[in-house]
Length: 311
Ligand code: GLV
Image (tube, rainbow, N blue to C red; front, top):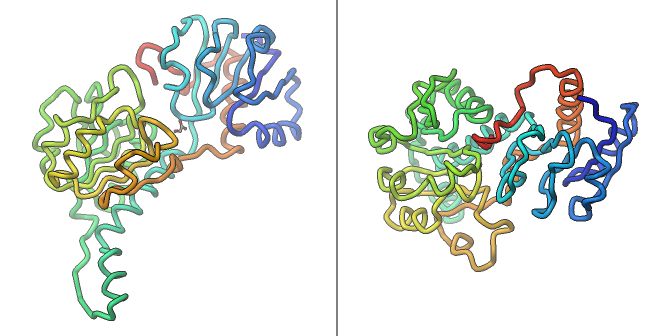
């Protein structure tokens, strides 16, 4: 595939431009704020690189679209994708970052940080024994690129990790992987933590609902996938019913999270503003250039999105 005109937009354009200016990529490159991209830009471009394109853009005019993020729901949602247009996504250190994010909250809970901070404030000497990772059972929804790194890091610290995926195919570092349409009761009722790394697709939209939450027994819930995979009301009910003791949420149905959301003031909810796995400019450029080379050489590459699956 010949790609001469590259339109680069997205949340990292300035950083990407300063890295690409140092390299000679022998292409015509146009940099444009993502909200200012026009149909004329797309007429000109062979390839579009972005993060959160305007809903109105019609990508059937370009040959290749590349997401500087891991997720591509912002590209596919409510858009009829022309099957002739190649879509790729960024693969980078997301799994490592999400593993560290998740571990920080799991350890905070096991090591009883909140309790000891309160005892210290009252000058109380109050020995409470911390929990240990090797006794933890974690269920990870999503066994792709990111879920596998999370399973690798957690299992290396002694955690038992069960995966849940569409197919149920076995993957490295998971004790077992169960298909999402199977009975998950025994895994969920014994889980100490549930971590969702799910992408947003028509299949996963609202998938984490009362059918999952009511089977938990005071587990922690971490969502680092997409907000719309969770039924918000069912999650709030599960917190009220103590099926979930803490919800650590990095992604939301609507972002930024509206001021009116009950999550903000919920004692058992921890909110972070979609920061668990940001793409660094260097990673964005490295993945983009590697993919560009492979697309031009018609080589196989693993970051091609299967449009029907949506990831
Ligand atoms: C962030 O959520 C991404 O898609 O990389």
